[in-house]
Image 1 (cartoon, rainbow, N blue to C red):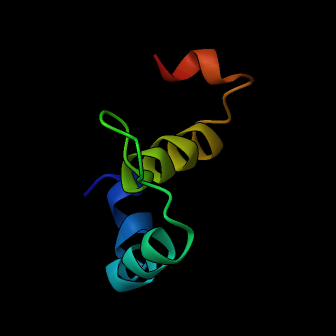
Image 2: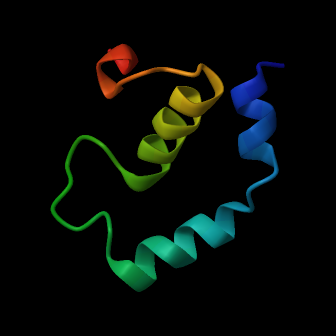
Length: 56
């Protein structure tokens, strides 16, 4: 199992959904939802990327 999947498994999905509804963070977003954004940011941290351009 990839490391990213292992990290995500420790985060309760209801916690993410609660934050999305509380802060209305997915409003107006058609392509990149909050959960996907979280996965990208975790990948950047785990991969020790120097910039967000490395996420392409």
